[in-house]
Length: 383
Image (tube, helix red, strand yellow):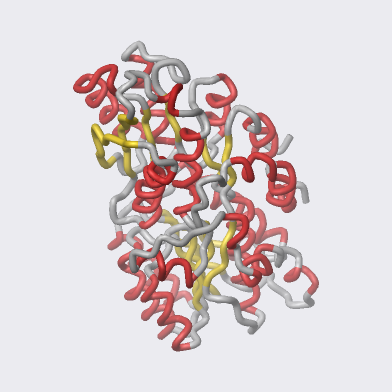
């Protein structure tokens, strides 16, 4: 039960921290009208907390609604496709998803979770197998978001409800679901918000502290995840945008793809530090696994986070949180696997019950600095 209220507790206890970080006025929560403005070049934005729509807020509070039904879920089959088991965040997500599904009444033997091994062909075959087996619902974390149209078509043709998680299909794909009134939805957070929070953590420290070489601009390294993944694209764009919105001048010294992997990020940052030396002031990483690799390179180069370089990630992995507490990382962003996995399961249950869902079910990230990292770590670890 404690895990079911983690998101609420965080939301209640982090209000002050999140409010303090919203000074740039970016709209980074999911709002379809705002998304259209951004994609067409519009500049009008507002804070993540203020723009979260009433419909989305309603979705976020539906966790307990499905528990009040008499529907027997014990014989219902759930197929879950994860893009890659070795991904740290998706490991947390799938573990919580399975536990929550069992709590809601599914039999553990009827919950089958498979590893796509970061290969779309492998995952497509797994989806075909689930369709042949006649599962009652599919929950899919796609290897490639660009494959969503093909995935959706085959699952809808099989008359199986579909819940996408973590990797969001593009806007045109989501429009198809609505136009055809299909039982397809996406559950996840808006990566623009996570990128904005990364940038705001740097801005909050002040230019005087960040501009170590006193040239009036911020020199940074960017370590991206999968370049095809919308989360990677948005985190990359909006982390830097937060600096620019604060009217800071920026200079990108290196922008490389680390594919979410710690070892690749370590090599990328080691190379960048070797090439650019003390000019590197900030390291942005699209996730914490890569931030951990970046930290290894920073340590090896004899640099010290918080003194002569600054480092931020996303996910709030336990090791990253411990590093924030000890000062080895500047900050991270909590990617709430509790609320996301629970909302995905609740959406699946509603489909099984013959009910409908909104085609987008959103949640919020939480900015994590030294001020609240211990509290988040306690919640994540179940203390």
